[in-house]
Length: 457
Image (cartoon, rainbow, N blue to C red; front, side, top):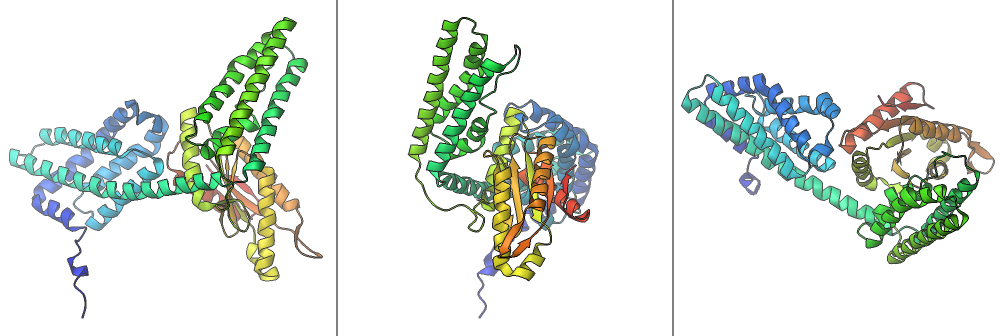
């Protein structure tokens, strides 16, 4: 006998249909006309308010608003309050918007505040429309009902998406804490010492007016900003290290450069070395706090697992927006990889993938992130990089892969090529949009004959 449990499940479309049926057809038509006629003005006022908001403003740019978001908001209003839009389509749209807001990290209270502004603007427009009093009442109930349903569905999707992002963030943090702590500690201590030596050498060799090497843009500084801050998020030593870096860059190095008296110069050198020693000590304390655990990397290639990609790209977007910086995503695909598997079997293909991953790690900086995206695809997140930097790295990778001899089995060297799609962060806050642009550029590289690097427009 068929269970009636499913029959008792509420129909998600029912509330939408109920709100529509409660409003006379003439009112629904009038609202749709008013929305279409006022959508551009309402969207303009909405984003003027949001750009001025101290919390929402930093997530937006005038270019992004004018190029994409303004039209998207107009389309959302028209679609929501159109008689012709099916309830199922409306539900799907709100869920998509909620997930995107979770990707971007837009707080839900800002979304609710924005919809309140929209309802206020529509109320003014409805009050000026040639509708009788009863019609205005019906219209406002209709508008408020649909907007509230949209927020309910959006909030639910936002919560689910936000929980997924949080789980991914925590998973990456646990992975980062599980890296080879001893090896990473020595790498970063060596990078710090190398920078301090470069400053002292520069003091003896430089001409007047030459800029001193900055710790914040050195190999150590970039690692600290992009990877160290993930590994040691929440540890109090991190704030002290960042303060020390700022002090070294903005004061100590400058005082060293300006010191003319030998005694003053010696005092500044002692101060400089004492601060470097403090950073080393703090760094050692941080590494001592973490356990050396296994897990989190792709088991075949030992690069990052793709499940950490959203956490990293979203974090780089927030950094770029806050620091007015730039970064890039490289999406890479080994050309004709199926023929390698067909010729040498999957064991041979795995050997090629491991050697390709080693090449990517060798060319990338320690501050960059290398992921296995799936199959023969990889993704590299290049921190602190613009279009020229990203294309330079992509070309070096392309040449290196093309020149490398891959060893599959004894006496059987293999040569392969790689196609690369490059996308530079353009201010759009959704990480999936950036990855999609890189994917399109990769498709173009394949379409142009492979063994190419293409920059997304």
